Image (cartoon, rainbow, N blue to C red):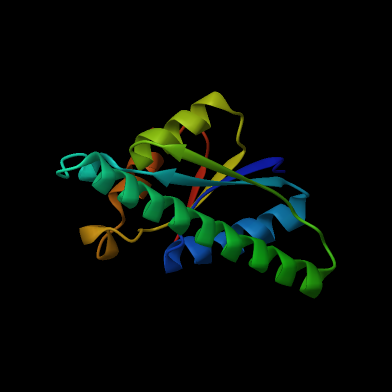
Length: 147
């Protein structure tokens, strides 16, 4: 049923829970997973020095690498438990998360988007995250939001 699944991730608990669902779904339909991490430096562009922005960006890049490593480790565990090897590729983009996710969806043909209810940022922890809400409202592909 699914050939290509987009998995936006920030490494948060909801994103890791979404990863479990994406892996199960991909395993059932032999689909490819594209894990996407979006680096959003716009809140930090007002920092006093370019060096400050650079160090924040480096920290965000490292967060993405950590999230990708967790997904990779989860895929190894999945393979060990099921005997199925998942096809996963990792993509990093820079920009506003919801806009960037929607652009990636628009540019590629995804059968499904699987994402967590909220990420690591601010009030998103208490409500359906604004990123997830924007993606659900505007995506041309079906979106599974995992609590």
